[in-house]
Image (tube, rainbow, N blue to C red):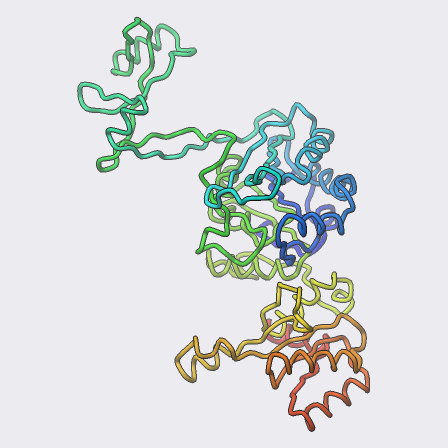
Length: 456
């Protein structure tokens, strides 16, 4: 099995083709409610609920869509492996029943509450604010499962330490105590000789655990439980933000990778989005497999691994099954096709589709102007509009609408991408240039593919 690879495609097709039975040590998924959620901008709960309903109709339809994928994930997971399913209030209760069915209720280990520590509660009319996600943790069996306890470092002043019940011995060392538990009398005697037994005023025996010191602070290692409120969402992590509406913070995936895998293990994220799981896996020296049906997401993952970790496509990892033909691109969802075309031209997609009036992306001239004038901020308004149509022939009305959008935004040049152009559309492009001074550049998908092959 190949690892350190990003597969572009539906995971229901990719997993049977590339991933053998019981070959993966750890699986994390954060499934979208629709296949292109990464490119949808949700403005509030009503729109999010509508996007869910548009794609699946109801929770049962969503589970029907997920069920065969969960079966595949169960198939590829090792008997010693762990499975993390990230979801939220929409379907978490339904998902647990479904995964119980496929993995077995006795293999359910934890319901983790991830509270968005940095976001706070957003007021919602008529209800308590929603400010947490649910992560369901399952094992495939209870035999030899990898799990490493995770700890947080808490730092206290001496006053704060005493207020928390921490103590100092005669040598000034800070310690906390715990009941003797399962320690035998012989073990207690051995600990007594090491100075690690504390006798209470009532005569009870407690075991001492000495704490570290950092400068003037007492450091306590606190066991991480099933409520995670120390990790803010990615929207508050400036250095990480990629503009992904559903991006998860790196610290969240680092905790999961550290807890449930060992160096060299294979980690799978079958709904990979912007690649946070892959970065965490590579950082901790794990092998990894990412799957996403979005070519745009796969591009973002590859760029992320390059920019943040110095990993290069074709050398340190492989990007597999990206669209290569016009037929591949015809089969893409419309929004995904738009993203592909804009990025292939070198532009930036317009992710806010409400009120775009025919502008699917922008091609900025900032780099050219920065080199020429030395001032980046003077060039932010120097851009060309891009219009994309996923149709065999763009017609005259399509060009007319694009001209209107160009005039509105005061643009004299723009790019129009389609599989082909009708005679009327080409004639209108020539007329607009000669009589209105509008320079519209028609580009076919075939030409874009040729450009990608040459530049790639």
